[in-house]
Image (cartoon, rainbow, N blue to C red; front, top):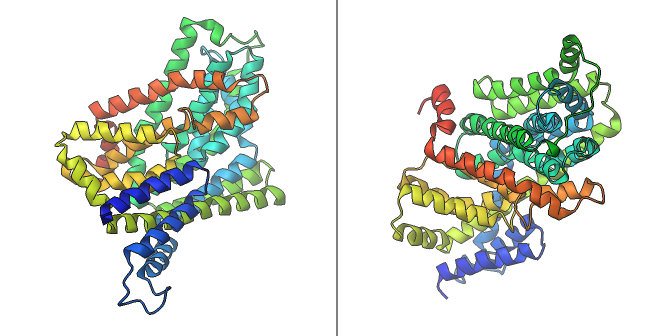
Length: 449
């Protein structure tokens, strides 16, 4: 076998191995070291079996991850999300938004989507958002006689917004992999993220207007004075909204680096938790533990993926794929459609982390040839990866919700409810293809082309 063929074999073995359930980060490291030992094997240079350059590569990649300024923001944003989640701020937020939206068709679904969007902005952790809203909003929607599949679709779709809406952890990982500015990437994601949330809400209102039985109007209650509604929002919505805007503003307007803005968010989360009298030693300890565990996973994932990618490229795997794609003589639009179809299909068996750190870098060197802006490509990928959490057979958002849903809720009903929201994601991607300014206008306005 030639070296490029071995590289493709290496990629196939990796996919097969993770489908068996092996840990991704350590599988990447093992595959990188194993095949790298072959790739860098030089009997004239090696004085012992451990005198192989692949070990130097592994050490250098580990140091590069530890010293990467972009990845420093990951644990800080994670801590902000976990401390906000454990401070019981979200249940207050959902209750107040539910009252504020009570006159809209499907008011509870609208409140759930708005809460998901704001909470996703604060945490960016899909599992946390879907699980918490599945415990908080889903039972209330079922109690209000909302359609089960419709309610499940709302929770799953809203919970996945954290992939796209800043400060998304996925966008940080893409920025590190693609070598683009996190600040510009966050700016590019703002309008598409809230556009998708708006499309979800428009879909909900339209469906309920057409078929009111999906979301029956709540029983008549006493009219709540406007002042009381504003008071509820002032104690739940606005503090969290101000914190998020302060963090994003610090990033977008250049008042601080992403790491400094994330530090502000972590401090603000602690202050909010203390203000709500929810900052206990146990909750603080849980938040720190979950932050360290998740951040370690992300960092080791990068160590493994960069080692794997380096060996894959050294063996000629990237060149082989690039020659194959360029030999097809695709137009830029066809290239984009092809890559997004591949990423969509990869989202069935794989999670976003494997797709971003292994498969997206295969396409990145070709962007310049086709004249595709890496920022634009990153937002397309982020939109596309919404589907990886909602499309069977993986559909992790559906499994998160099933894990906390009442026993009578079937997984098939959750899948059924998610499908219409997938069409909203595809519509967003089509709009982005037709109007790239949706993603590029804001970074161009703030930072120039």
